Amino acid sequence: MYSKVIIKYPDINRAYAQSAKVNYSQSNVKSANTELLRTVYLQNKSAITKWGSIFDIDNSIIASFIVTESGGKDFPPNQFGATGVMQMTAPAFWEIFTKWKSIVGSNLPAEAKAYFEKVLPESKNFNPNVLPSSTIKSKINKLLQNNREFSIASGIANLRWLLEAYSNGVTSPINKVMVSYNAGYYGTKDKVAGNPTTLSMVSNKRIPLESRSYLLKMLGKDGFIQLYFDNKMNEL
Image (cartoon, rainbow, N blue to C red; front, side):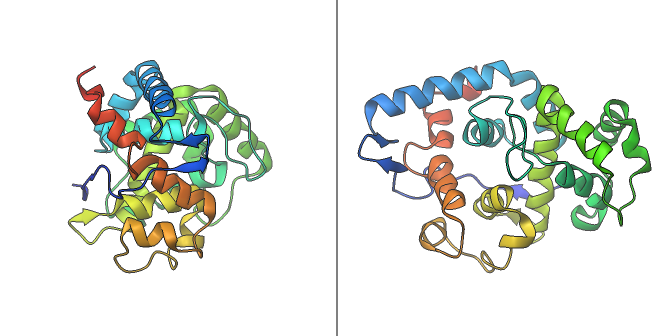
């Protein structure tokens, strides 16, 4: 039904390095990151597994996104309106819910539609041409921040939406999705056009610095996806 996601770890032989004291290949940082990833994964395993199965996304990707986006913390909205463990925004949720079929090519999974409409009844009346009111946005933000399953389900739906937006009909590039999840699809799709390698994207200064760092944090040497598999978290 969905495009296949091919995971390479590491996809770039370079570790994320914020400073001389923060390098993902340093033993103390690597150990701390491994423990954080394991803790966040186990705390959210039920929701990750459930919604990962519904949207056909591997647990390693979802857990890595949660750790990279929030460290597993239910953050309130930031200056861009992103909130919760997967740092989703109310407009992104509205767009996924109302424009799913136009991007994905099929209906939103029945289980997901039923869940979202149960938790947020107002979504039944969403207009694909009109953004939700400030009152509804506020309600969505509260759910994203305070309802962990809603936040994770919404974030995973966003990942699948982006995967299909970049699909060639068979496979989809996770590196492009990482950039667009962080910096927005419409603002980045032209910057990642074609078939860029992760290495070229990390060096592309047209892509926001934070988004480029996300590529290294998740796909780089000793990044979260590599830590997930090296430590056999798929067997937990």
